[in-house]
Image 1 (tube, helix red, strand yellow):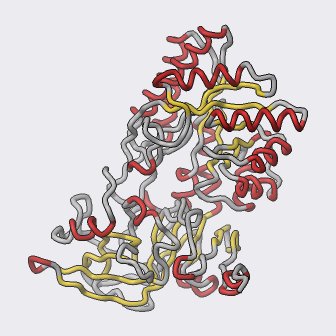
Image 2: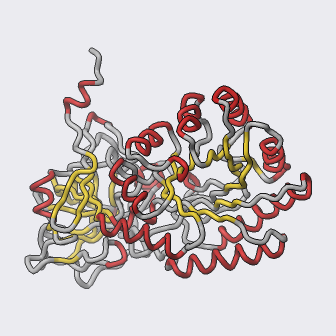
Image 3: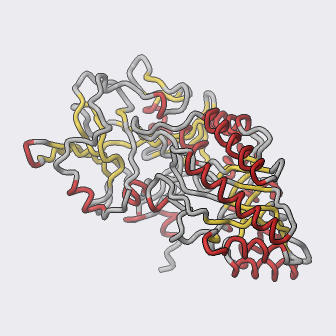
Length: 466
């Protein structure tokens, strides 16, 4: 989908009552099980209830807005990936959401951890995450970040440029060690996703392009360095992907460049990291591949290409992030105002303003990400009406849920829940308009506890030196 300016997209769809995929629900209180943590139900009183915790009780205890993660669901998702891809390395992509508590969950579930900044590395270190099970991404890692990673004994550094290779060599010599690396290659795959989260086409910032021999040159460069141990190749084609064919093409192209390297040097690479990007259901229109089907297709493609290129057994890795934390999470907001806006042609739209917005979920404004929402604190007998859930920021593009049917009696004080918001929402949150960032609360059995506390105005003012 080509990127469109937010103002343009708002005016462009004003004539449409709703997108084609959105249908008027027969029951506005119904919950789509595909969008919510396992076991999410409405109580007898009509409240959204997750892991035994009602929406109103959570809002009363922790305030609003609020991010919530079902710990059991997170762990189950992590375990499901580990079991489906048994024999492979599964790294949790920390950029989706990372804190020390989550890093400990990941460690306890037997996964590795993928970080892409010195800050994420510091969180992993603070959680006591094993550095040898950690991979370090990033297209512009600083010398200080690399020094910290190498000093910790990082498991893999995924190199992204010739400049970075030189930095690693200088640091390895300074620290009298060698560094295990993977070379990130750009496969030229056009993933079926938004251009801002597609990362394997040629004209973008990540990796060494296979086209023109740049990837092969980088592999040879690393293999001849006395300070680097070249382990293999890394590929990542994008995010929120539902079509597995792009991964199959990437597997073929990465193995082909590995074969070219073998032919040029006589050395055989044994590791292939295919990255992440597995899509989840944010709306009824999203149809993720079942994990068992995904694993079967990956294994078939790996086995076929490996035999074809004569590699034998390879060490294969994946990096799911959103697919683990997203389905285990949701956000909770309080309605502040409700406004009916007349559209051309006699149509109307209800604007429901909540106490958060683009500062706690920038994805809809950044690349038109679609979300769902439900009335969370009660059930309703009123008919569904087409709504747009918006935030409180001074921006026309401050939209959280562009199109959703909510009960006609939606009113100030009601709670709205948005599934899937644990993936990237808090990680990309800001203090725009000097709003404080919401807390992240874990649900575990009968208790709820904070992973990240709510920011305060004092936190913001503490940075202001006056």
